Image (cartoon, rainbow, N blue to C red; front, side, top):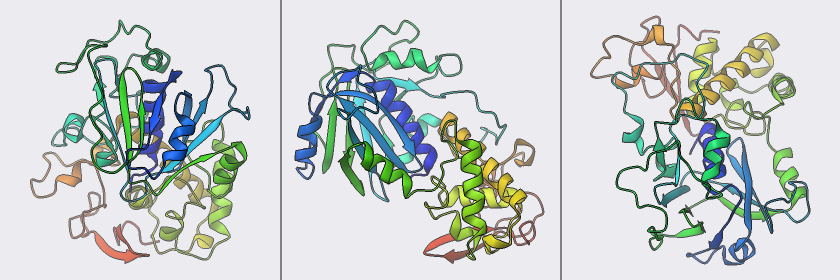
Length: 358
């Protein structure tokens, strides 16, 4: 299942690719035919993520306010098997890096290049996105957003192998596509989601109400942090369980759970009620920073640059980007203790018994 940074990166990408564009919508699979018919011909206004949920606004015109009853909201959740697949002409591109990451994490030496991962952030969850490295660190998002509305992009060179505008045509959908969105520059196909539905504004508020705070929610950092601390401290459940509970904190998945608990030195089996507010505050801050780094770079990298082995062990490639995740039996990068692995609520747990002894 994609973690929260992937859905935030997806929302940014959709805003760039489709922002203020009139789209054609269809349901090749047929399971979302009525919903697609309501979206067909509407203008894509914008989208945002709350945890692992994507919410996208459509309206009859580009100047409709987001709180207007004329807005139709598309709500999707990819679940374990959902994916978005993209294709388009040479202007249908997004930056490889959305903003300069604040954290200095990991070493790119020995790690797969982003293009080897499909040029995107979400593995199989976001396939076919074309990225531009030329605009990566200098181009403001406002410039990138001109792609959707079809305005000129003098800052970008046309990617090799991509057709120029006017020459591209969408290929027939592959597989069971629940929803297809098409602009004059590109197509996005949604397959296999757990959720694909249309909502009004009250429905959107109901979705958000049942979710915990998102560390990446703009302008809500202090409020979200306080809510997270309260959510954890009133529960006598293991913190390893609570971090995966989307009603406690939205967007954290198995990798961020394992890595943030290691970085905080907290045992995944410690009860939430027994962790101080100060330590939980630092845990929130670290998850916020790690998720933001994932949005910016498209990769989950959590190892501080000073902890990266040099050279990377040939039999332990994950040591360049993760402390404990998928490293069962490997030596801890800080103390050398073998990393432990066990099951918790059907998901594999990873931790260092020595560094996370409390």
